[in-house]
Length: 94
Image (cartoon, rainbow, N blue to C red):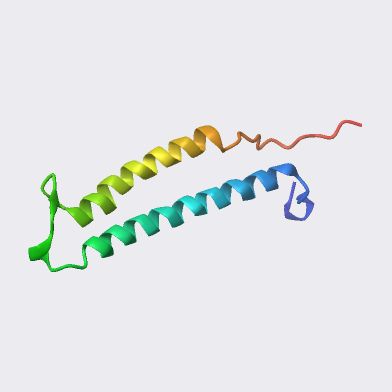
């Protein structure tokens, strides 16, 4: 099937668009989390930093905790919200 023969009414497009929006939502959440902690807690002078496990708190919460939260969220999304879709073309039976 070439580009001109693509059926845009195929239900796989609706699924793909929904899942793409979920992915974009995860990226936006990750950026807001990272930015909020990195610039929120990291905007003070280094002499005033607090530390968690030897790391500056802004780094620990934005990068370490943020990574763990994103891993958990991606697992939840993949197991609970994404749908397996066949890429094989379905032949119409007449």
